Amino acid sequence: MVAEVGHFARWYNEHRPHETLRGATPAEVRDAVRPAKDVVRLETRPGVPLPRGRPPRDGPRRARSGALEAVVERLEGRRHLPIVSLRRAA
Image (cartoon, rainbow, N blue to C red; front, side, top):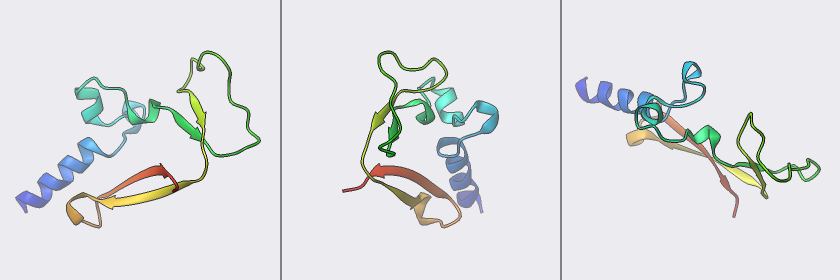
């Protein structure tokens, strides 16, 4: 039981974004690092123009990308603790 609660606490603090933290994880806030939600966003829609010059003040900058794939990993192999990420498709 103690090990399972520890895995949940790690997932909750390191991988699950929190709405009250504006999409950051508690670990990102604690360590004062840039939240994953604020890194470069990949734009896959060819008809959508990208902003030129400085990035917009209200969000991260965007970069053109090809197809993306959703990758779902599990923390310590536990199905109820998913870690979801997007990666460029090969």
